[in-house]
Length: 218
Image 1 (cartoon, one colour):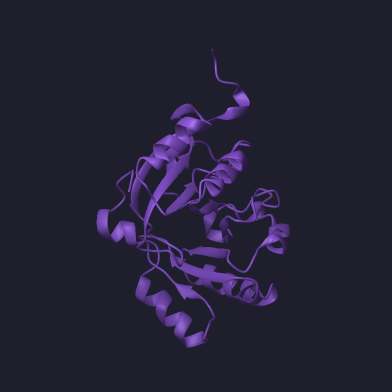
Image 2 (spheres, one colour):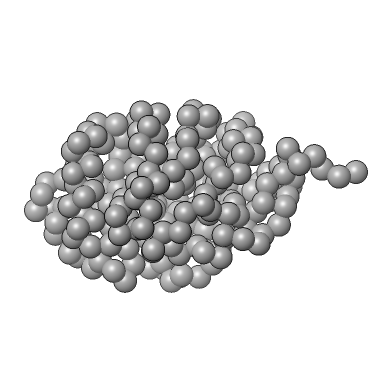
């Protein structure tokens, strides 16, 4: 008997690794990477997830996660919220007792995401090529345990992000992360700017790239 479409998701990969970003960096985590993304950011490092993958029923996804006996699970992409059944997946993972985070590109509504999920919301900068896609109403939905991420390609991006930080009082909403785009902005330069301007943000490098480079499934 075929599994109902409502119970399935298109999955690019499921793997166990160290969390490379956010305040949970370094923690052993299972990653569920969903296929598909409506964005085409200039610095994207997961273009392989734009297509392909396999369609799996929700119970099979939960079983694949459980095999690693994780404490932490991250649902990522691609853009997870582009698949409507991602909401069911997030809820089921929370019901299973995991500490769940969602990595989203910030162009789709987050209001229906289970409140137990830690949302990591990208704000797209001008150099990403997708700045017009930011769904600013999402900021009102963020909880104190959520985090906002800026990936910065240069000084113009930094100045833009600094303005957004202050205008929207982001540091008063939740944690804010500033990351240098790999190969485009020197990490030391971004660190110096943050210190110079006394910004209330967390500087972060992608730990998984320091350990394994751009290898998929890491």
